[in-house]
Image (cartoon, rainbow, N blue to C red; front, side, top):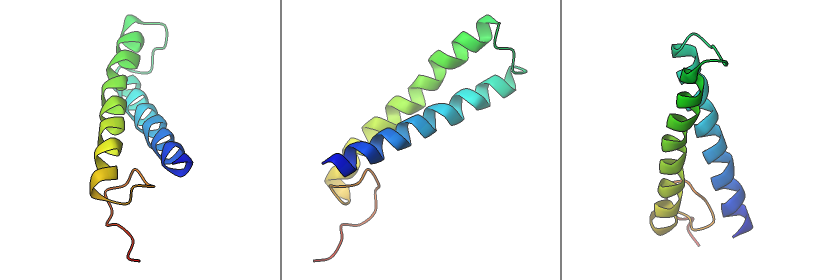
Length: 74
């Protein structure tokens, strides 16, 4: 279970960072504008979807991973 949590946290943080930086770059990287605050809020949506995907992945793939990969053969 701890492996799954760490995997999911890593994926969620990476998704948030990528979305936030992408939105900041699209807004000309002005951290003092209202656009930066909006980018931070909007970037949370893909990160939240990453958590949902990770939860679904435990039912489809390896329950110890947030990936949609096939379950390991025993």
